[in-house]
Structures are given as structure tokens and as C-alpha cells.
Amino acid sequence: MRVIKLVAALFLILGLAACGSDSKFKTYNGPAVTKVVVHKGARKMQLFHNDKVLKTNEISLGFAASGHKQFEGDGKTPEGAYFIDRRNPNSRYHLSIGISYPNKADIAFAESQGKKPGGEIFIHGKTGDGGRNKGDWTFGCIAIPDREMEKVYAMVRDGTPIYIYP
Picture 1 (cartoon, rainbow, N blue to C red):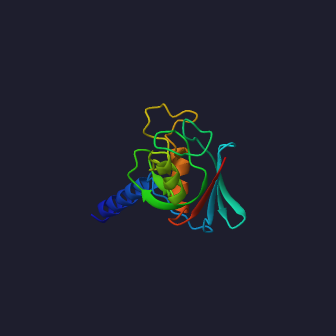
Picture 2: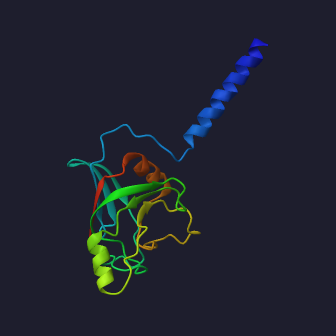
């Protein structure tokens, strides 16, 4: 009887360990990410702790990658200073963290042109686009591979500044 209980406990422990290793929700115990920097031209995103680069990712951008996002549907990724303002654990694109676009200046400019600025700009994974996610394919978001997004999701906190350069 004791052997059966030991075997059952062992299977339970192994089963729980297997479930935990495949979770998209990772933990991070390193230095705090103090800023995110995106260089659109280089297709790179870097996570910093003060002046030290903690992580660099290759990225995909909006399908009209050149220039600053100005209007809803223009396919451009914003440029400028924003901050991480929300998280979506149930994203269509695996996981996502929101960027605070549009800011007051973005809204004012779009309205002055009689248009909407758009919104819902995120850093997200690549799952969910039926395999069409090659090159620059988003509607203005920043995309990275799912496994990398799991790490970024764990590392970057709401309120973290993000600087997006041309």
C-alpha cells in the first residue's frame, strides 16, 4: 500500500512539473527593466536596466513600417516616447503588453486632420496570424516570437517607459 502511495505521489509531482514547464507565464528575478528602446530601422527592441542592455530582440513592425503612426489603419508603428500601460494574457497573439499610443499630441494631430489616431498598439507574440506573419505584417504593433514574448512579458512592468525611434 505504501509503495502505491509513493508511486502515485511521484506521478503527481512529475505531472505538475511537466505542466509548469510548458506555461506561457514565466517568472523573472533579475534587474528591473527601466526602459524599452525600439529602433525601427534596425528591427531591434532592447530592454534596459539603467544603461545596461538586458535583452535584445529582433522585431516585426506595422506593414507600412516607415514613418510615425498618425491615423487609424495607416499600418505604421508609432514613434516617440510612450509607456507600457496594460497587459493582455489572453491575446490573439499569444501574450501582449500595451503601449500608451495615442498620447495627447497624437490625438490632437489626427483630429486636426479630421481623422482618428487609431490605437490598440502592443508588443506581442506571433501566434495567431495563420502563418502570414513574415517580415513586417502587423497593423502597427511590435511583434516578436512567442517564446521571446513570454520572457518580455515577465520582465517588463506596467509604467515602464518605451522609446520608439525611426
